[in-house]
Amino acid sequence: MADKIAIYPGSFDPLTNGHIDIIERALDIFDKVIIAVLHNPSKKALFTMEERVKMIKQSFNCNNGVTVDSFGGLLVDYAKMKKAVAIIRGMRAISDFESEFQMALMNRKLNKEVQSVFLMTGLRWIFTSSSIIKEAVQFGGDISDMVPEPVKIKLMEKYPKIKE
Ligand code: PNS
Image 1 (spheres, protein in one colour):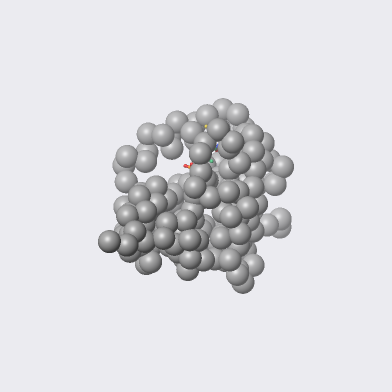
Image 2: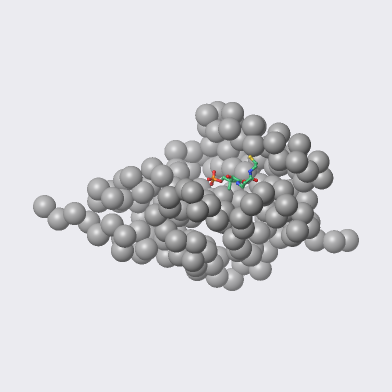
């Protein structure tokens, strides 16, 4: 039987432990998970595409089921090209639901063969997001248990602590 492949798409600016929690849950269901970083020139990101992909690769050193890639254009076209059967999205709180629902239905309209699969994040990561981590770290907040080590190092490079 062919491997069941899932795409886990996102901006990953940067990868957080919340993302890792979702990837690990997805690996319980699917044979392979492709972490697909969106190339979106109109959205201003803190990290370049190369930096984001590199940090993810460093964080998943020896995990055979995980590959990292980047994509542009329609997600469903990318999923089809990769022969993926599912798109994984993480859900934290009910506030995630509306935009995820809209995106899933649009994706289904564009390609009925790819299913959206929503995985609930671990309770520990319920408030974690790339944006809130960036906000905290730029003012010297300690986020070391919220991101993998390679991400922490790059964040510190971008935002050296403001010394009084
Ligand atoms: O991490 P994010 O920013 O919430 O991820 C959003 C992402 C990458 C999943 C979404 O923007 C996306 O799929 N973009 C690709 C363009 C696309 O297919 N749009 C149509 C579906 S709404």
